[in-house]
Image 1 (spheres, rainbow, N blue to C red):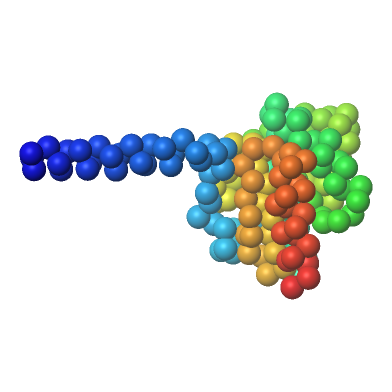
Image 2 (tube, rainbow, N blue to C red):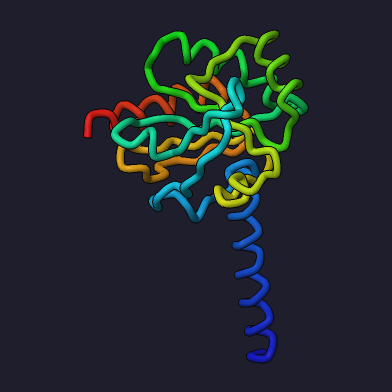
Amino acid sequence: MKRFLLPLVIFLVMVGFLFIGLNLDPREVPSPLVGKPAPQFSLPRLDNPEQVFSGKDMLGKVWLLNVWASWCGACKEEHPLLVSLAKTGFVPVVGMDYKDTRDEALQWLAQGGNPYMTTIMDVDGRVGINYGVYGVPETYVIDKKGIIAYKKTGPITMQSLREVIVPLVKKLQAE
C-alpha cells in the first residue's frame, strides 16, 4: 500500500500545479525588469533622425514608453485609446517604433493621429531586447527616478488603463 502512496502524492501535486496554471493569464508575462532601472538608450527621433532622445530626458517625470510598429495589428487596436489618453495631458507617452521603416511609421501616425510627445526609432530592435520586448505592443510605466514600475504586454485596454495604469501613474506622480 505504501508503494502506491508516493506516486499518488506526486500525481496530486502535479494536478494542483495544473489547476494553478490554468487560472493564469497567458498575456501577463512577468518582467524581471519591474522594480529595476529602465535600460538606458539614446535613439534617433522619428520626426527628425538627426536629433536623439534618451530616457534620461524623462528623469523627474512619470511617463509611459509604448513600443509599437506600423505592421502590428494589435497596435492598431490600442492606438485610439492612446490618442485619447494623450489629449488629456495626464501622462507623457513616448513611442518607440520597433523594427519598422521610418516612412511607414510616419504614414501610420499621420493617418491614426500621433499620441506621442516624441517617437524614437529602434530599427534593429536592440533597445527592445534590453527592455525584454516579447512582441508589440508593450507599454512600460516608468517612475520619476527611471525605475520600471509596470509592464503591460499586449494592447492597452480601457480596463487595464482604468484599473492598473491610471491608479499607478497617479500614485507615482504623488510621490
